[in-house]
Image (cartoon, rainbow, N blue to C red; front, top):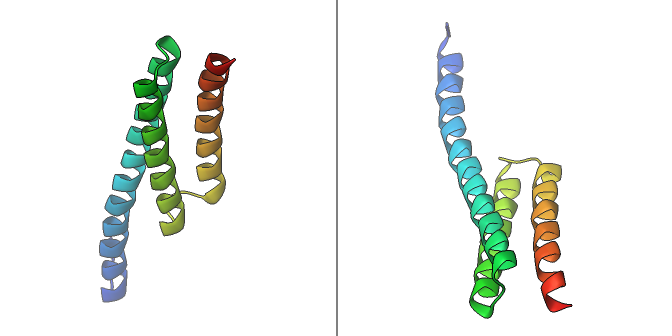
Length: 99
């Protein structure tokens, strides 16, 4: 347990930051899951509406990942890895449909 005033303040700040970081991480996970679901739905039934859903969900996920990296919630390599995984899944689903 903290014994002096500054360490008590640090505990409060750390808890506040932990909660803030948790909301970012949760949002990133949710948007990634939503994007992967849209990609699998598009691969099952390709169409313009499904393609638009994939594009919007991917854009939202990319945006949230970039913001999480900028704020410092995620390491930049982690963000790049997640974006790369998502891009690969989108490319794999969209390319065969066009060919």
